[in-house]
Length: 239
Ligand SMILES: [Cu+2]
Image (cartoon, rainbow, N blue to C red):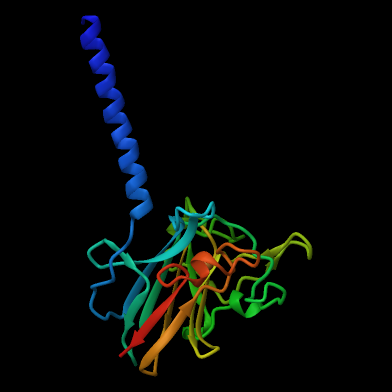
């Protein structure tokens, strides 16, 4: 290869690699998910991703988000979710966020609202937990790993872990359906886990869903994702 050709080969390589980098950055900064087109269904599967690209204009661009896993396998925005009234709904939360203890639960950032560590409004006020690597459980003798627990681990709440100053609740996010300020359904989710729960919604209309673990940015953690529809809050239409 002569010197001139080598020069242009290097330039081409820089352009190609640079172009891929720019393309990846551009894609990352503009990614958005379409509104769900799935028909109203009795099953709702939500994926919690830890670091969506929230904004270019802040160093806090990494924000967690709930996304709807559609029946065809694609991900859709959680801003508007349609659910049926008077039918048993099976909710599955697939939580890819990291495990951590939440010390403060509550919008004020000063109160200790442990009700968000409880399963509320679900059948039996309980849920089922899979991939429970963060929880002390006894496995059946034939089991080689905790993912083989066939029916999941029944959980009614996640108790405070550790001591008073450094401990917390084993809850990374909640999927909480509100009627006004009343909790209709509360499903807590530890990080790196799968949680299922079943419930009925017996009133038609529009409801707010909200995560109640302050996982956004700002001094109290209630900005960013926590205050943005399709991230840690949204609307549920029950019909
Ligand atoms: Cu959250």
